[in-house]
Image (cartoon, rainbow, N blue to C red; front, side, top):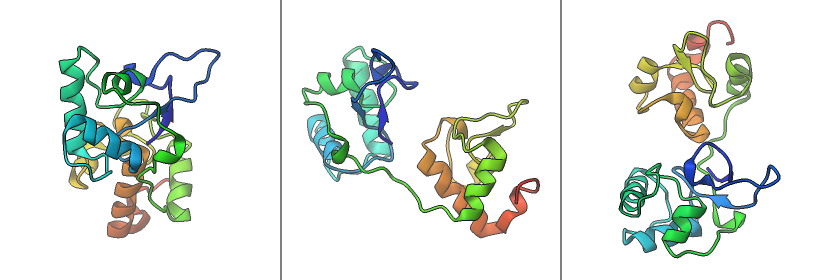
Length: 170
């Protein structure tokens, strides 16, 4: 989703005075900024930043000697020859989350999508185990996944088994 520069990625730019208005585009985002990126990469421009777009961004970043994180921040955007994006050029891949899942997320992680349990077993906003995450279709570390994807997979899990997967918070 779109995020201010200065977050975790190396391509999120440097932050002066603690804030920046630079728009960062990453997997899960949609809109005209994504179409512009896709056109610049020479891939089909459907306006959806999915797995294929992320792979193309990583390839481009490697070819330019940039950190291949799959995120289009100021460095990658400039290397693509694109002007800065406006906040209105991006729509996130958000999911409408039922209030019960909002309560579970608050209970499990304080709503923090990057949370990791003390032992490292449970990860992300809903404290997924890696096994559950993979079973639901997730890849990689849940705590590194975009929040919209964590919401989507938590909703899938909730629809499958109700609150049983969160015995201390359901």
